[in-house]
Length: 169
Image 1 (cartoon, rainbow, N blue to C red):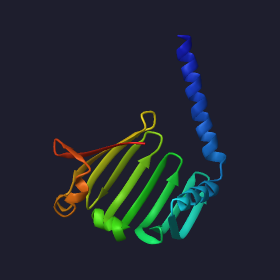
Image 2: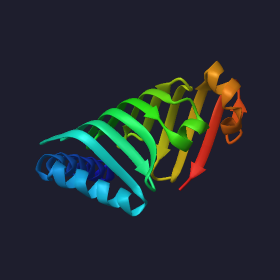
Image 3: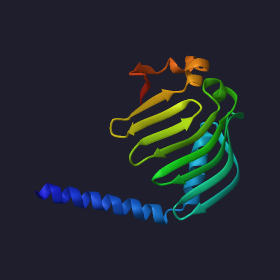
Image 4: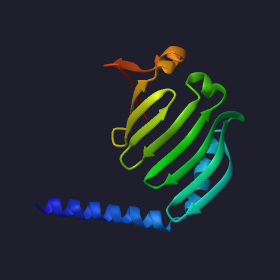
């Protein structure tokens, strides 16, 4: 029973640490650091408005470029320590040739590893397992996705009418 107490104390300490970090670390610095890291991979962001608060960072009317080529426009992006949300995504360039261009939303919860997205491609649910270092995506493809973007679906396996993609990282 002593190990249960130690486990609970360890979990409580982890929760307190996450809360304190999320309250006292500058969200502006975290957003800038993320953009600098993306720039190393030739991904650049241009945005019309950005607002930082003690709990996160909100960006509106964002354009995403890869190697100076347009990839997407995002109406709003919300970054919190416990959730990333992007709404109103319009794919451009080569990204639009891989899947339908309109994405209503993408949600990612880093703590639980859950991913959810909806758009003209259908509905996507996924899970990112940090300990196993594995990403599993389940796609319920729309008729548009199956008809016009079948070449992109070849990377998925099909099980019970669902398209499944598994990747290790």
